[in-house]
Image (tube, rainbow, N blue to C red):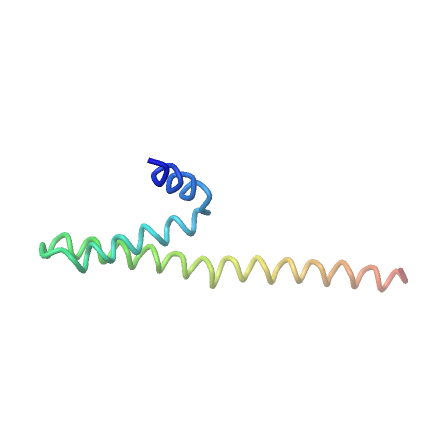
Length: 85
């Protein structure tokens, strides 16, 4: 019983992207293990789609945010340098 509580606690500690990753892995595993071609197609597509969305977010959205924050930091420092501070 303690193991179940620990697993529930651990699941709540995960971030959203980690939960999505585990769900995607489950879908891919289920898709590979099932014999039903319809379930196989849907589960593999769902799992690959989730991983594709996570990759898109990491590559484009997160990197763009990081670059924009760096741009703002450098822009603000340049203003301070011009002022002579």
